[in-house]
Image 1: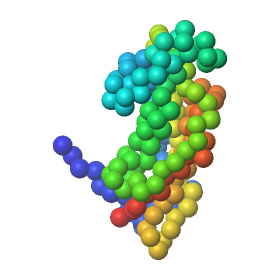
Image 2 (image 1 turned 30 degrees about the vertical axis):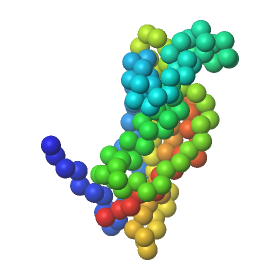
Image 3 (image 1 turned 180 degrees about the vertical axis):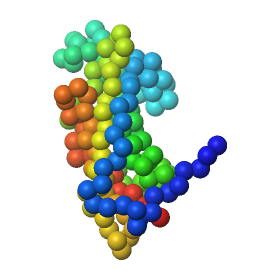
Image 4 (image 1 turned 60 degrees about the vertical axis):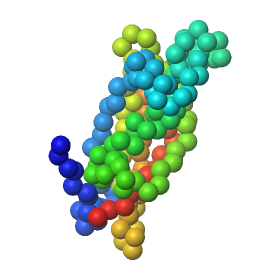
Length: 144
């Protein structure tokens, strides 16, 4: 098992882009997440119920979406334990069709650096198709 190197403060600059990623989500992901999280809300697995409450289809769990998106930051900084703060607003659902699922696209940029604390604030843009699904999505990371 290889150990990732923790990103150093001297290697980071404001405006730096993180490597973007497209993250697939299928109904199987939702079933596994429901079991792991205990969130078994019917809107995450039954399209009739989801549509009856006004949703376009089964939707991904918001916390799954949030967790999948922050993986981009975790990989970039080199250690998930270096994320000291993370927050977002859920702006639109992520519909997950039965056949083939969908994906979320995650891009990040370093918005600010705090030299005294050796921290960086990363802003993520998270979309599904043309919809921005997370808003004000920011992580603060402790750099080496």
